[in-house]
Length: 324
Image (tube, rainbow, N blue to C red; front, top):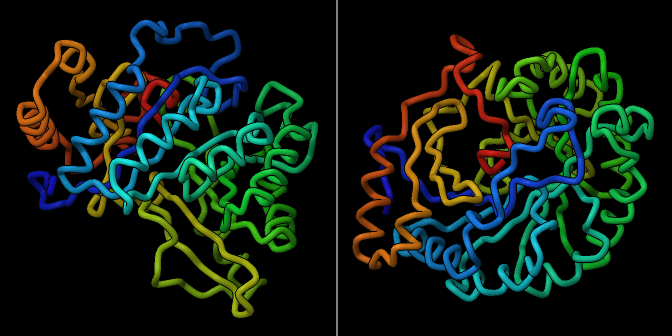
């Protein structure tokens, strides 16, 4: 088992397969940004398989593939099949913006991906265009239909409410999720990079109070996945709401995850610069035993908590550079 110096067990890995994205969400990547990692520095599928295998050997049971937009990485279903073959009990999931999902949903399901999170910040076409920099809603809707047809359930929709931008769209998202059988997750924007620091995150406590009263929501004791979200459900079972509140009510004491960027850099915390470059070690042919020891040593660097509230300028890298 991987355990940090604060007694937290690390059993969840988020791994970026590309830092490229076909959207430019206002809280994530600035328009015209071109500072992406060179593909020559990306971890190969063989290196990813070795690294994930080492984490699985050390007790990691959940792996989420992220980006950028992970479905831009050519041959991703093949990688998914290789990862699920490492351990029949591995919970392999994917976070996507949904624009490429129509083409890949069936192949992902066949490769053993168990769960999907799809980013969707508004059902208003013009609003989503303003947030993402692209007329993305038709593609995302087609992707959601394909995901349902492929048998993914539940499908979680990730919405980042921004004050004065899409905060008036929450109720319509709730209605859509009830109609489609999706789980809605509201996520506070984090001050990562210039775009994240310029965003106007919406405090979620008042939103929860409003929705709890309207839909008779009660707290769910059984989590839906291994991440940081807390969940509430309606009495009739038709609606589930998740909240991720890294700013207003951080969950650092129970953090069970680390992130690997596309170049193999291990990030120990979203809100801290502590990191370990694993890519050069993998390319140098590090042995299995030494790799395991390096991972154990790296986990010791995981900080007790982030400092987004006290030092919002502290993390200058964009979210896409970290791996979601």
